[in-house]
Image (tube, rainbow, N blue to C red; front, side, top):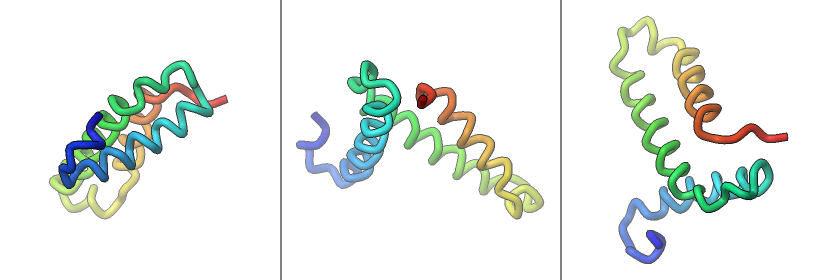
Length: 83
């Protein structure tokens, strides 16, 4: 359990895991054991997308449409749809 390591980034991981767990509890309870893995994937994937978005030419950075599309695509891919 990563909650017991005391590493400063544990707070971020716990937040992501808890958010994903709450979503899975409502949308797909049988997948709740995957909450930590999915939380890490979403955290790192969204963080990477955001970091790379800032390296795009200025005309793209002024419009966050691409970033929103990337975020939504990642979430649709990793999380089961809710009813």
